[in-house]
Image 1 (cartoon, rainbow, N blue to C red):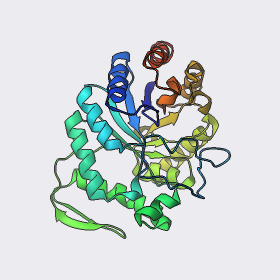
Image 2 (image 1 turned 120 degrees about the horizontal axis):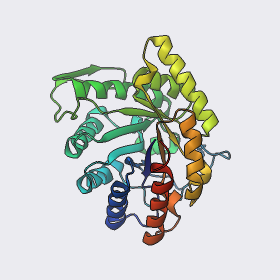
Image 3 (image 1 turned 90 degrees about the vertical axis):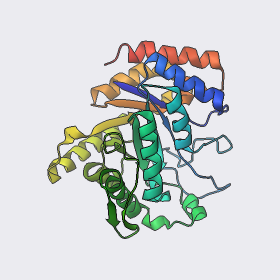
Length: 297
C-alpha cells in the first residue's frame, strides 16, 4: 500500500512547514506528497462542491492555497525519493504548452518523480474570473491530456484540436521517461470514461463504496475498448472521518481500501492535526508510519 498526503490549507504555509513535511515524509517512508490547486476563490459563489453532502466547500478560503508546481519544485530539491503529485490541478484552466513545460521541468529536476493528478473543475466562478468558458471544461480537459502526450513524446510536436492548435514546434525538456503519469480525479461518468481512455490512474474522492463502483466501471470500459485495466492505478482518498485530526482511524480505513484494490491512499495533511504544532504533527506522522506503512501491505 502506497501512502501519500497533500500539504493542504494549513494555518502555517511557509518555507519551514514545507521543509518539515517533505523531510519528515521521506524519513518515515511515505511514498508521496501532493498539492491541490485553486487559482482564486470568489468571495461568494453558487457552485456546488461535489464531494460533500451539503455541497459546501469544507476548506477555509482565507488560508493559503499556493501554486502547486512551485511548491513541488521546492520539495523536489529537499528530497531524493518522494514522489511529487498534484491532487488536483484544474486542467482546463491551463494551456497545454505552458503546463506541459512546467511539468516536464519538474520531472527532470526531480529525477522522474512527478504524478499529475487532474480534474475538470467544479467552481464555475473561478472559470469566469479567468475568462474561460465553463461549458467547454470537459472537452478542454480531454484535449489538453492528448496535447500533453504529444508535447512530452514527440519532436517536433504538432497538435490540432477544437481548443488548441500548435506546431510543428520544439518543446524541451522532455520528461525523464518520455511521459508523466496522469491520474483522473473524480468518479463521474465523464471521469470514468476519461480514466479508461486517456489516463494512467483513477483518483475518486469519495466513499469506499462509490470509489469501488467507479473503479469497476473504469475497468469495464477499459476492457470494452481493448485496454488492459492492469495498466491503470487505483488511487483513493482515505475516509473523510480521518481528514481532520483523525489519524488514529486511518489504519482501519487503509485496510478497507486495500481490500477493494486501492494501490495508493492520499489524504490531506489536516489528518495529522488542525493546527500547526510541529511536535504533535511529527507524532501523528510517526503513528501513521508505524500503524499503516509498516503493517499494511
